[in-house]
Length: 319
Image 1 (cartoon, one colour):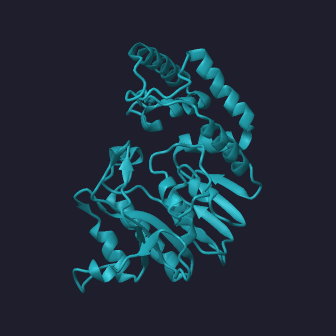
Image 2: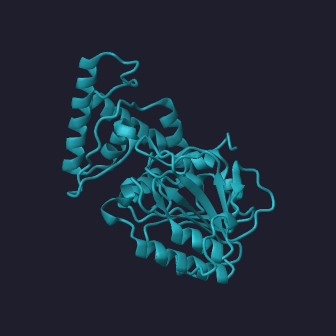
């Protein structure tokens, strides 16, 4: 269990916050030269890893804008801009959860205020407007329709003191001199020449999930297979990698991933009782896993090693 992990200032679907709190980063190699966070998302994994240099990569343009926002602007500027939006649009200064907040007229006012800011963002596309919306949206998530408009509804949330602290921490991290921000395709990253003690961490979109990054066929079975092939190349060249993924999600069994782990004798870890969650909806039939190609001599996390022999169904497995 990791009770002292660093929070990210980005609230993002698929964030590894819960897994970091369970000690996911304790499964990483002790010595890391270059840490490659290929699908960086909220950046929380990188923020909780010790490395000589960080390579934060995500192809999502909104995340890229956030990374550079924290890199280029001071925390006080970002916080003041959010507070200015709250004042200008009269957004709530308190949680408006209906189980405790009974003023329905006030909730309607807050919804109107939120929708006005959302309309302004969709018109002018200012990153500070979108970042402000994130704190007040449903499940505090960012989501767009096919026309590229932000469409998440109001979510009874507010801009908290913890959010301010996370912005300060985020600015400190993204301003590091040993941090490199990129927005490459994941396969462009995996094709480069890695050096001794480099470590590659991957959190690709999970097949058959509700996550917003996987809508409209954002990640396909073909890409999933290609990713596994690329990881085998890293494995054969001696490069250490770790990947978060799922063996089971609802009624979907990722049989190809399971067989790939078995046939290549990879190490797999999972947290007992952990449930994948999307937009507040937990999935009872989920087994989220961490897959790596190296041995972990001392496991200080809440993860336990999976006995893959229990999942083998055939002696004719294909890599």
